[in-house]
Length: 101
Image (cartoon, rainbow, N blue to C red; front, side):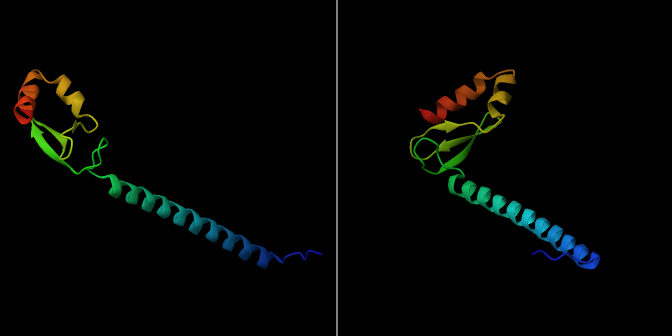
């Protein structure tokens, strides 16, 4: 048998429910942010091919990520577009050749 609530009880019930939902949403967002941060720290500057540590190398006004293990070179988002739009992309390839050979 359910007991009906008084208007005062109903008011506080709704207030508590809203507060719980708000805090639950905030906590879920914090958990998601923490998960993303932890995943990023595990993979930050790690080679996607061999997993070794990478370092940034300056080449013709572009910073390229170079793996210390397999010597793979990787562009961050937008860096390849910068290179392709430059007036003399061969300058990059000349500097790349010097780094590799």
